Image (cartoon, rainbow, N blue to C red; front, side):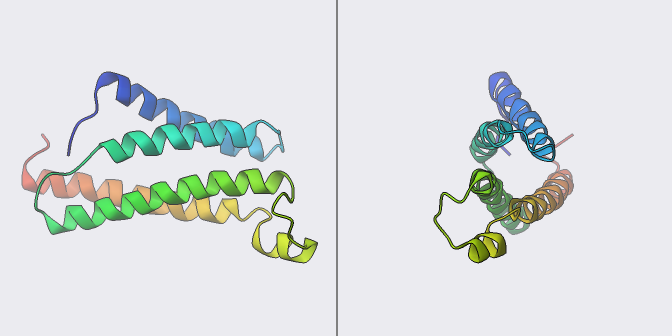
Length: 133
């Protein structure tokens, strides 16, 4: 796996921290929470997309694709957090509650599970290859 520079690593970690702060603050219904989460999601996912795998191991490539899917889901969760602030999609109240209201939590949970699984497995596969000491 391509390693991030120090600056990129700091952006990556701050993005993850902002995602946690934004998701946690949204539980208290603070209006600034989606903005903090979205900033963190953009920083986190962009830095993670910069980490590329140049090897030929099929398992790592598959896990890397899973990780990229979770990145897209993190960004979708940010969009749904903004949609949760109000019905700016102009849906009927029933459709809004059925399809949008608080669905960001489910998307975030799926993304976090995919991220956790793929990052753990990638670490194990890289150890098997002998590229990580």
